[in-house]
Length: 109
Image (cartoon, rainbow, N blue to C red; front, top):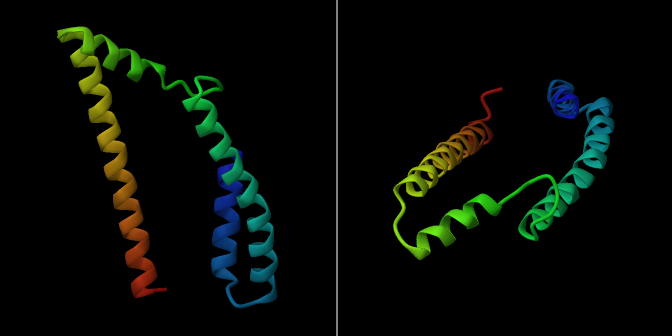
């Protein structure tokens, strides 16, 4: 959480001080933090698909394998709940992205 708050603070500081020398320095430091973070996210996703690391994608695979063997109401309910949660998360991501795009296109500030 601390890393996120640091990054958010840097982003807002660069926005508030835009088109100044401070903005350029903050943006460079932010980029130095951003690229390792992206590499780490890519590494974690690869590890998850390999079945290792802190993220486990196996339960979904287990559910689909069990359903392939035959219908099971309990597994279908669990899988349905997980799909609903993922759908809500995806909607929130797209709403956030669309809001950012709108603000970037209209530039109200």
